[in-house]
Image (cartoon, rainbow, N blue to C red; front, top):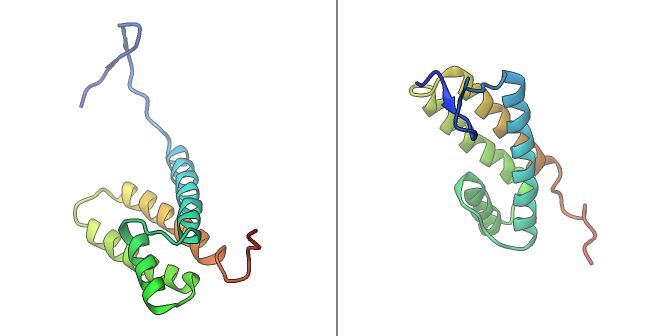
Length: 119
């Protein structure tokens, strides 16, 4: 790993590192934006990829409430995180868990039939 990076002015500057709080804040913010995007995709009747796509397929195939299917998505996310424990450093695992919790909570809590009055 390099000790210094090249700045836009051509000189060198020390590399910028983020604190754990800054990383967590960015992950939660990003997860919330993605969760709202998933809700928009779901309301449009479309599919997405990844574990959210699998949750959509289960929802469409079974007719289960998407909030319940969010629990299935969370279980899939947990299985992926457990598998990553063998190869990824614990700090990154913790940040990934925080992001998965934020995303799945928004999907599970804020989507229930009759909550929205779309015109």
